[in-house]
Image (cartoon, rainbow, N blue to C red; front, top):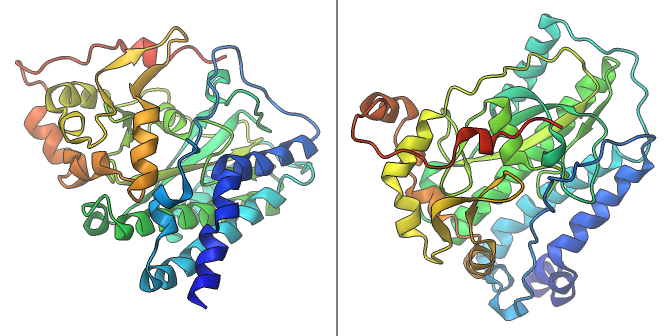
Length: 343
């Protein structure tokens, strides 16, 4: 029985198929829709999840019986929510409503929080945040985050921490599908993002929405959860979402320029000493090849999340102690490079 369960989750044939192939299969469903918005020339491709490491080097392919029995239900429900998210793309939804009332926004947010969201905000997705070769049904989107348990994350890299990450993806799928159902029931077009992978750069979209700020480890730091979070979106036709243009979290850049703990503690030495500005205007924080190899062999790693001060000290406490510190070094990448104009 144990071997059957493990083979279902991590059989050699499935590992060889790769997560990239599975995600690409989901993405093909977007072409069932009548119209799509495509990326502009400055957009990047989605980062690969498959570096071609031998199966025996994948940490999740050698789970114990007890670990497999713990992990199987979480993975099952994560995949179930993911499959359901894909079904919303099987045909176009024709909206009968285009504008929301404040009361409906309150209802939408109440549902998200009731199902476990930490925060929810709204954004118009720029053309350079849609991955190359992908497309989205609408530019307007609802972005939200879920928390990952501190006690488990601080054991990174470990099976327990990775299990909690996958549980976060399960929650993302459940919430995005529920929000989609509510929106469609009220006449709005809505399409949930996939909790893993996705058609767009969730971290950058979350920053543009004001959910937090991206820093040295390339992850979002939020006032609610620090770096211990996962992100998803719902694409919608709503034209009057309460989008906020300013991001109040830019001070965190200067704190991270002083801290750099994630840089020092990264076991793969994959985080750059200084974020690198690319020709496209995007900022690259990590060497993805170094990161992914260690990630694959060590339960998804996430040491950078575990050691980040924002993961175990409150955002407001750090802000009060640091903000305006006269001797703090400055984040050297100009903010306009992090936020190129919407296209």
